[in-house]
Amino acid sequence: TSPSGGPPVLVLVGPPGSGKSTVGRILAARYGVPFRDTDADVEARAGKPIPDIFVDEGEPHFRALEHEAVAEALAGHHGVLALGGGAVLDPATRRLLAAHRVVFLDVGVHDAVRRVGLDAPRPLLVGNPRARWRELMEQRRPLYTEVARAVVLTDDRTPDQVADAVHEHF
Ligand code: S3P
Image (cartoon, rainbow, N blue to C red; front, top):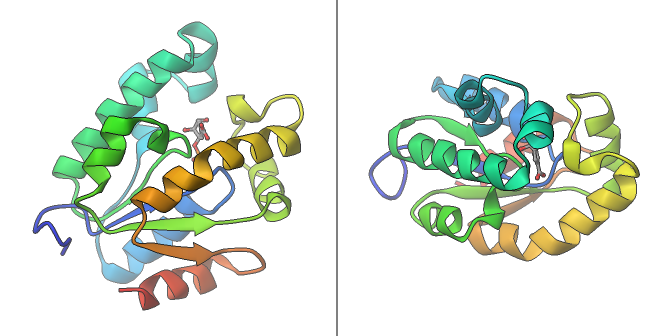
């Protein structure tokens, strides 16, 4: 159960390529609880993929949808929740997270870019993914740290090893 007495059990934050969705699914399966991903919730709300939301409506609109999705998931989802990498940019979202068991999955640029290269496109990494990723992380590291109760390093670890490390914190 979460410390607030309500949902969710565990919230994962971190930059693209930190493994939030992969590790979140593993933890949810181990705990026998549902897994939810706010990127998927935003896509469902918008009725289109994230890159299309960025192109058609722009990042501010995406962030507004994301805040609504996070607020709804934090209020109503009992399980493991993975947030989009930029969700912590929103101060209102950070305030909501204060009541929850939040883990920051930390990662260096090398592993992160390798992992996102295998996955869905991220509009904010287009062009020079390494440089863009570094900029994002520089801006956000303090925010991930602010909202997290625990930090787990994911470099050179398999998703199962990261899940073990997250579990050991609680
Ligand atoms: C974003 C990260 C993505 C997705 C969107 C914006 C970001 O989620 O929400 O492309 O601002 O870092 P992941 O962290 O799951 O890649």
